[in-house]
Each structure stands twice: as C-alpha cells, then as structure tokens.
Image 1 (cartoon, rainbow, N blue to C red):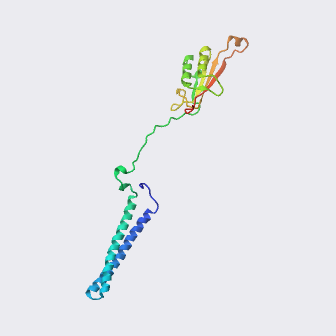
Image 2 (cartoon, rainbow, N blue to C red; image 1 turned 180 degrees about the vertical axis):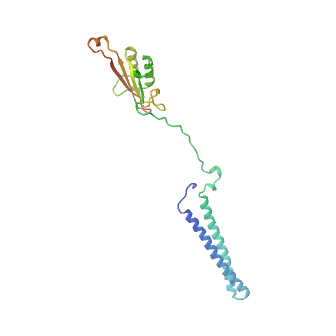
Image 3 (cartoon, rainbow, N blue to C red; image 1 turned 45 degrees about the vertical axis):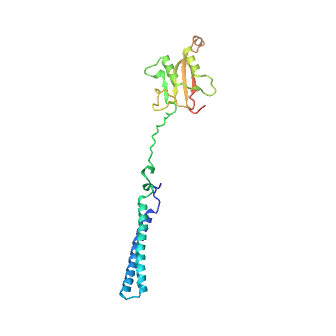
Length: 225
C-alpha cells in the first residue's frame, strides 16, 4: 500500500488541479454567458434561430464542462490529501504494525577478564577451593592445540601432587566480566598456573625454589561439531 510514501510532485499536482478548476470555471462562465446571450437574443428576435440554438448548446456544454472539471480536480485533490490506498481498504485488511520483542544477545566480555591470582587475594582460598573454581571454569574445555592433556588429567595431577593453583585466567560471558563469573565464552582459552614446593631431591642438588608449571585449554565454538 502507499501509506507513508510521499512521491515528489504531489503538491505541484494539487496546485495544478486547483488552477485548472479555477480556469475552467471562469472559461465556462464566459461560455455560458455568451450562450445565454445568444439564446435570449434568438428568443427576442435579435438573432436568427440558428444562433439561438448554438447559444443554447454553448450554455449546456459550459455546464457539462464545469461539472467535468470539478469532478476531476476534486478527485485529484482528495487523492493527494489521503496520500495512499490504505484508507480505502477494510480495517482488517490494512497493513498492521507488528512489534517483535527479541531477547538481548549474550555479550562476551573482553579477552581474559576473568582473572584469579589466588596468592594475592585478601582471603586466601584453600587448595580444594581453588580446584573447585577451576572445575567450574573449565567444564567442557578441551586440550589446546596438539596437547593431549585433558581437564581430567590436570585435576588428577592436582590431587596426586603437592602442586597448587596460583593463577587462573579465562574469558567469561557477560554480564559480570570478572573473576567471580565462572562461565566461559566459546572459542576462548583457559590458562592455569600451578606451583609446587621443591622436593627433597631438588633441594639436595640446590634447586630449592618452588617449581612453576601450567596448563592451557580451549573452549569449543558453539557450532563446532
């Protein structure tokens, strides 16, 4: 339908229709006046009967011309004003405004905004509490690249050795882009750093400092098969 469409030239068309109406009425009035004059002149004997008949015809033609011009001009003006065809249709058949409410898409936080540096936190968590956070974050994660170490392997190592988690980094799914949001965005990586005190054998050879190690995993894309 044409509602809401405003083609160029509608205003000019309306003006032309009004001017044509005015000009037509003036011309018809002049023709009608001449026709009446000739017709009356014929009736009163001033002119011949032929001129009287022509005057009568001119008068009727002027009336028909005015009627036609008024009809056409009125139709043009009305069509321009309504601006479309929707008003001519039954209400049930007119286009309807339909609003679709969609849920806001889940936004992904900036890269690696989920960070836990356990040794620097005010309330230092225990080993088991750190492992539990890692389990929540890494749920569904897979080995990164050519690595064959799975999340289950890392959890087994953490339970069988004296190593503890010091740093954990991931990219959560917003809102809540910090280390308290344990969700992980698809297609991102998880980085885990562990630390283990030197064994007696290491201390014997002079390697007395703690040993650092780590794991990296990736969260599959949502459309990955």
